[in-house]
Length: 288
Image (cartoon, rainbow, N blue to C red; front, side):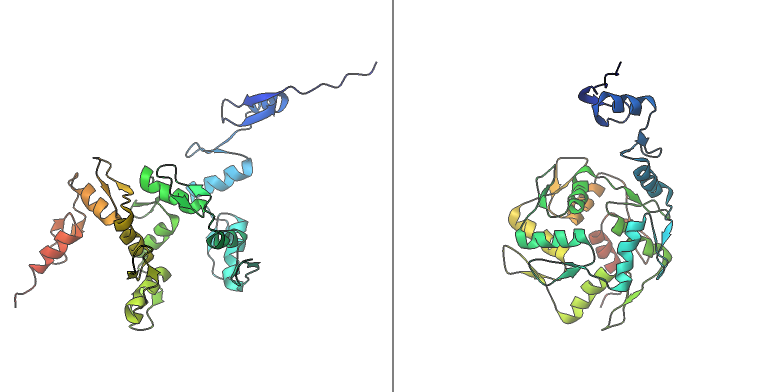
């Protein structure tokens, strides 16, 4: 007698250990019975496969097994290495369909094309601000939730962006690899070099969307635009007060604590803000 084929039970099944959803009972039962859950042992994050789990755990261990043959920079995975090596080879195989600009990576050309289309598919869950890139949105959301996942191994200072951490690390090793072509001042990173050289050239490429005012730095322009929009994205963690710029917010938060992060270079007296530090240091200068 021919054996009847077993019909899989359909439904909505969820693993109680990692919340992974399943359509069929058999795959759900196998997954839960043999505990094929992929949970990070360092932070408890749930991952979709053993490979993604291994890659994720390297963030915690600091392991970077893939090295660039041109400059010895190390990476977590081979795809990141390949993307990096295009910097050295000059390869830009992705072209914008709206203009002649070319790019090294497919995701970069997608983000660039949104400048032409005006598409901003990512919205901040806190203030509904829209973004072209998911990474930019996530980074912005950390302003609201105060999350700083990247910490310096030398001084434990925490940062919202991995790029900020990399730039900060240069403070500890003293490396300033970039020099101004006008005054030969040494700078730690390319963004700082470009901004500095604009002091010499007088270039102000960032124009306010609401008035004709121009700026050397994009951050300064965005901070200025909040005067027009009245947006205050920086909230005090101790009281309901909000601020339009980071400097005002940070200065205010210090008023709730006993912290004095600014030291006088003449007498080592500690002060709460840059403004009071500057005023104090003036007192050391000989009067005319």
